[in-house]
Image (cartoon, rainbow, N blue to C red):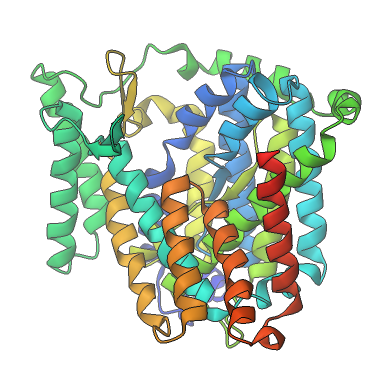
Length: 460
């Protein structure tokens, strides 16, 4: 026990063993949805379902374990939402027409390029070139973004053909359960209960199961019959996906758009991760005097290794998860939190039926997936992260306007990377307009041009 305390610097960071364990459990529960969601998403591209499930769990465990032991940060990683959609719909089904094996090859190479950036000085040059105010804006923007995701997953905010978004159906049982969870977590947190998140997740799951046993439709329930939960199916699929990326390198490089594919994967992964690390680093109080998260270089290495491992195993890019903020809010401050998450991901391979109650329900009539048990955690943590806006210099137009655009575009484009891109384009534009061109770091000019080129390329 003494070795663990010293290795993870528990006392130095104001935490203890039990707090880190609870924080790890909270983080895992908040992001466990990625196991079924990522599996079904990539299976649409033809990847064997069992193989994706195995790859998702193991890649998340590998990357998160490295994050904990190497970077000593309470940040969990797993295949990223958005990146898995890009893999399925853009790389394979509707865009570049790659086989799923060639798409995995692209993920593997992008992970290697990410690793090169992480171990060289290029990473620090890029991160340190970003104004402090924009870093806070990214953190607050992610808070708004994950709150929006939580409300969407709860069915409280839905698509509307007239206004794009609108209120959901409050007569729907899954929506009502999610509303109960939001009221519960806000009430408990307002009372100063340090276990508000984990109690709310467990309590909402229990209430949902009880209602399901009473005959209420579309409630979370344990599912022991789905074939994805049979270990024989999982390991059989893993054998099909393992190493498939290596045999498809030829197909990938025969594609005329190979460099555009690799650049997009690298771009989204790097800036999604950088944005997430900025946000959770501020929340955990792990920012150094240079405005950089402690151990950020090691964190990016963990991310890149996770992506390469995931590609070899059979899944899309691994990235740092903003749901780590739920564990940080629970008190997690060290890599021990991440080690707990990694262990739980490995155990989930064998105990997954017990997690089905957390992962939500699918309404076939509405063609919608609801996550009433975990959505309240995203809403709560997102609200707390918005507090970073108080750090902005509200009299500085060169910061406030790009900050606003960063936040609004994160939400409306449903992309952390897109929001960062818009904010980074407008910052140097405003500085030049104010006659302060020499005060802008040259790297910011380069990033602005790069982001602008990306938008133009996508438009063409």
